[in-house]
Amino acid sequence: MAIGNGPVGVGIIGAGNISDQYLSNLTTFPDVRVLAIGDLLEERARAQAEKYGVPRAGGVELVLNDPEIDIVVNLTIPAVHVEVSEAILAAGKHVWTEKPIGVSRDESLRLLQKADAAGLRVGVAPDTVLGPGVQTAKRAIARGDIGRPLFAQTTFQWQGPEIFHPNPAFLYAKGAGPLLDMGPYYVSALVHVFGPVAAVAALGLQGSPTRTVQVGELAGQEFPVEIPSTLSVLMDFEQGGQAQSLYSTDSPLLRTGIVEITGTEGTIVIPDPNTFGGEITITRPLTQAFVPPAPMTQQVVDVVQEGVLSGRGVGLLDMARSIAADRPHVATGEFGYHVLDTLLSIEEAAESRSFVQVASTIDEVGSLDADFDPFEATL
Image (cartoon, rainbow, N blue to C red):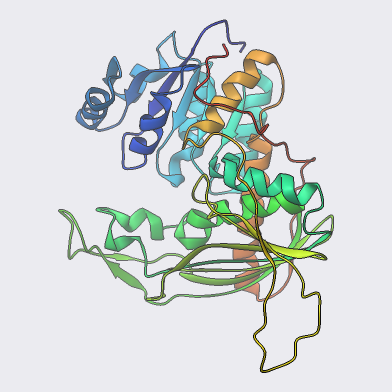
């Protein structure tokens, strides 16, 4: 479906916690207009619409049947991502879905096939990796600032979302957990740098079979843990390079957002891939012998972040502008599927305690230009 001149009409299905992050940004981008919010809990949709000045709110069908809406943002729980996305396609609208694209390979491929048949697009979060942080680091690596990339290390560890989320059970259900919930940020950043994943290995464990809600109306309620709550992961990339990653919600020690990529001429430390920007540094190799007890000093270079900082919704905006210009968008459904395929392969590797080949692959991953400005009117 083509998009005409002027701002693109956007609808949102799902008015839960993450909708605030999308709405606070999308309502400030001049190239899109948020026209309606739908939710199974219609009062929740109406409350968000009133908060952000969205003209229409109600049930899911309100969004699907709105003729002014071109793209629908799917902010439902992972277990129904594909079901809702298919309903959006059936209504003749493009899809931007929160990650993951689905919880199984079969249903996610079916979604992409339906989109292709209908001439519609699917875009998949996270778009945090389209922010100035990861994109600036990607450009630095591409121009050779660390030489040839060799390996990466990433870390995400803490005690879990039940300490802040009022209804966290779905984050420990199949299709979530630290791997499926947080892994998309780190795997997406690594695929942007190293290209598609060829094979993975992993070990997993479950810190506790149940968790307890700690805040909100459900505080004190126990719920089951359906997934490994800690995973140690190895990744091998098609084009060369390796990575090791830790994903855990069993750690009292908070260490998150760590992404370090080492090349033949330096190590670049990039911002948390769950944010859109931050400090970027490159540490250079020692240029002279280290002789104790003299202190070891290394050259650390700051990389100037390029681009306009915004937030969630920038991937949808890129998709809207790309549809209007008839060019590919960056956060494609195929990219989202490869990330899902990689994450599911990690789950399988943890279960079998062996290496698993990742069946899918993708072409070269696109980037946003350094001058991409979400706050500029271009349509």
